[in-house]
Length: 95
Image (cartoon, rainbow, N blue to C red; front, side, top):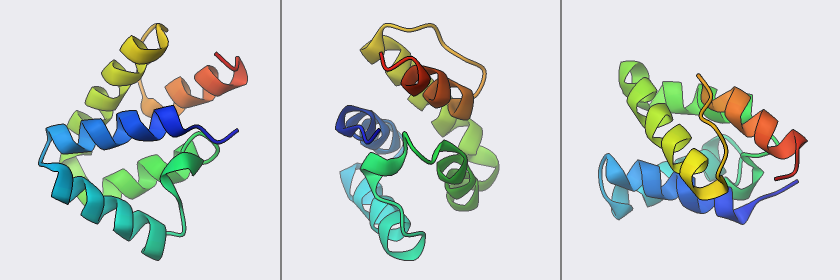
């Protein structure tokens, strides 16, 4: 299930660690080089986290934590230890 709300939260978290221009650049790279649209993250969480690791290297964990926090607050669900698990649980239950 594609989810625009999740995409907006992802953009917000990326912008928090840079700015909107950086977020747009990273998303452009994801779409054009990795062939993944922002609204496909809910369907491809493992690929998305692998992409974050490629882009952010050892700092990926900080971005992932920010995304987990934003998702938890926005959807009113408990935080998980990692982003892949959080996204999978969120969309398995169709919250």
